[in-house]
Image: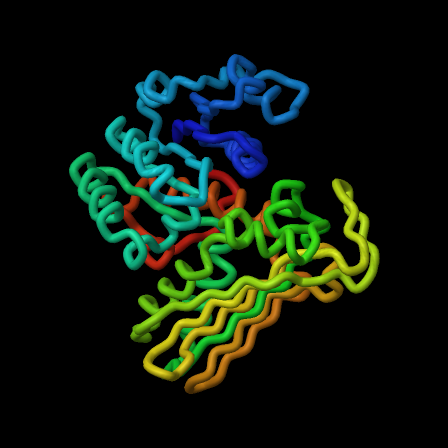
Length: 330
């Protein structure tokens, strides 16, 4: 039986806990969150279920972590600097960690000092830390590395992910700026409040995994303006307002673009899809019509990583190091 603590029970954490609960050889033994509306409640009630699991949500992380779980599922923030102490606390308690922190998917380039600290402590405690998810963690990096296995040579990579944000949770629709004016969107971008986190990490991961040297990784963020009125379950977007975001990340070697990641997340996207094109010997092209559902897939990738992380080598790993697979039960 794999003992699990859920650290963070926002929408993604809730989906992860719900899925983990269904695995035959998994037991959720603790839950951590600072939301006063969730603290003191049974975890099942806190995530909106009409049942009790016998696990009370606590804001006292140290006390919960003292239960010595095998794996802590960590889902609190996108920024490594904001969660590094949380991750270290989990590791020092002797637990493996699977985190949805986007910057942890490949932190070696952007945060080498924090990376070294996590890796050192994890190895000293004999546990594993993994940053994963669907994007980063799979669609725009791990999947690229997987299909590149049929190539004798890889010259360049292009990935396009088009997501209909109207099918996703409210926090994501807000994160991409749906319903704002173009000016408001730009102000939010300048303030760092609107963007999808993880594209530079995906580019760096691809470069490392394929042995493509990168001198520079550049990222741009632009609004996608609605051409017609769109109504979602949570909000309305009028014609001329911002429907979402278009982010492009480019991995450069000299003046040559080696990696091109194009992410478009906006409400009302007509033809959502995930498309990977590898130029090399041979060329490889893959399209997933409709795309990969981010919320469902994130929970799946995280939960399916649990048994692998539980028996992986110690230290800070990436999805390159673990052969992520589907587990019907574990």
